[in-house]
Length: 151
Image 1: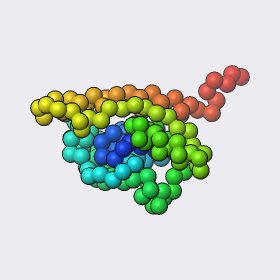
Image 2: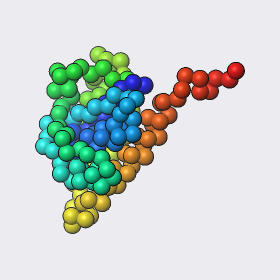
Image 3: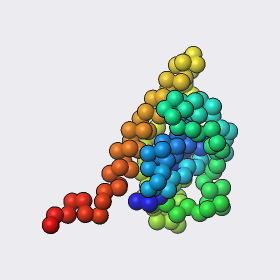
Image 4: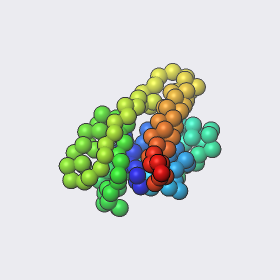
């Protein structure tokens, strides 16, 4: 696998979080981008909880699938969707592009009610879950050419 696209509803929390994490761990070997179905604004909580683990996402600016397609095209080996709306959009895209699509249902932490600490904990839970899945999924795609082949 050479390229991965993470897609969520608005590219302000889940998909940019996944993009930043994937770039942190696999950025030298896999091309990573993110996009949303709809346009949104940057999310400061997302930036804060990534900074807690040493990942800088402060320069992220939300973009839509249409904008990404216009700027650089949608030539990805794998599209990972994080919301139902994003999954539907990705399935529509694969009518015209050849890419594998995986759906990782991921709750939207922006709907969390309560104190600031309670909201940040919801963001941290999403971050930690994405970190685990990304490391597991992308690490497994990076086997060396002779893995599993005996001589």
